[in-house]
Image 1 (cartoon, rainbow, N blue to C red):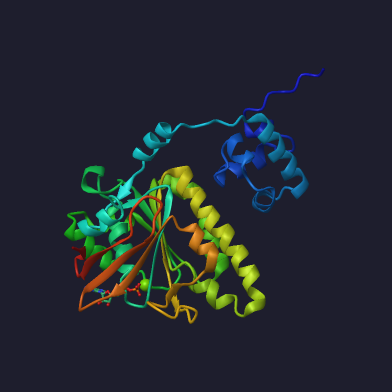
Image 2: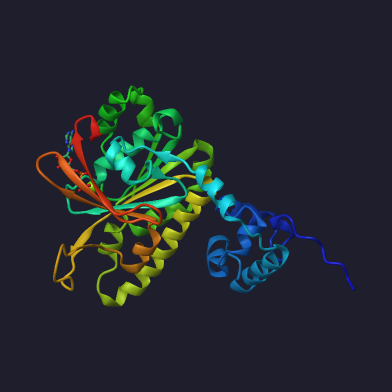
Length: 316
Ligand SMILES: Nc1ncnc2c1ncn2[C@@H]1O[C@H](COP(=O)(O)OP(=O)(O)O)[C@@H](O)[C@H]1O
Ligand SMILES: [Mg+2]
């Protein structure tokens, strides 16, 4: 029987040459294990392989990798290694089990002026703090789809945290996007930036606004959700690959199907609902007060925190 060549590197897979391997790595597919669980269609789209060849590569990668079983305590130790970014409000950090978690997508939804963007500014500053001060000593990639990023807010919040405001602003790489195409690309092409700049937080503010304005009507909904799905998939892949936190904001609509209670529902449908590891519902209270409700979390009980939005950022 002919002896099969053992498969260790991407280049050992059928149909994958050095150029394709490089492209795959740039997109976060840097091991045979990751190819084994990839979707052939996505690979094909990313690096221009034919779907057939992508299928062959995935199949070969599957055969070359053995399933590893983790015990509960392995997973527990892995979870302990997760990073957290403090929101700067103790009650909100407690609600989240210690702050915004890495390897996960946290979504904040709520009406206009509920504080979603202000919280993103605070997180963008706090991510830069050292670990013992509630940060991850990292930089930030900020996707601004609504044109509401305000460097002067970063300046005030950074000063209040005793960071050099100039440096704090430079550590936030802002991409202003006006089409979904740009929004998608800003994440698809983020790998190199994330590695080179030690990005520890990715903000997408807001996730759905461009998708909503570009894909109008029932006929466009299928295509919208498909694009949204692959966009979110890539965000989660970045979060997993680089152990970083993802914070996305989302708009709301009134759901007429909800007859009792608060009819406010986040947009984006099931795709959005399943993508977010943790969902926060933000609403305005008196003056600078905001009520934040933990709606969905895999390991924390539901509950509420009250925060204040001040000139210096988020406070208890
Ligand atoms: N410099 C500031 N000092 C205090 N509050 C501010 C400041 N800038 C904005 N805010 C408050 O933040 C609110 C807007 O929050 P924002 O995060 O932009 O809402 P959204 O949920 O629409 O993103 C406003 O109601 C405003 O009162
Ligand atoms: Mg906003």
